[in-house]
Length: 78
Image (cartoon, rainbow, N blue to C red):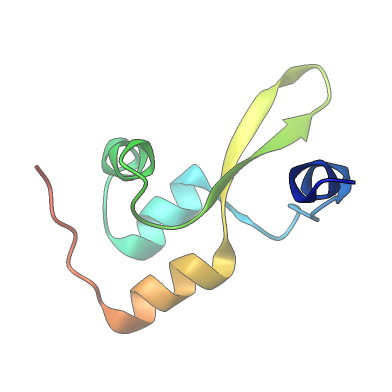
C-alpha cells in the first residue's frame, strides 16, 4: 500500500482541534487572516471536521496553535 493511501485510511480524532473562531482568538487575529494564512500554507495545520447534516467545519491543530501562541509569533499580513 502506498504511503498516501495509508494516510487516507488513518483516522485522526479532530474533536479536540480548535474551531476557526477559537484558533483566531487564541492567536489574536481575525478569522479572515487565519483563512489567508491557510491559503498560503502558513500557520497551523487545517483539517475539515465532519458535521451531521452540515458542511464540514474547518479546525486547526491545537499543538500548532499553542506553539504559535507560546512563541508569540507576529503575523505578517501581505
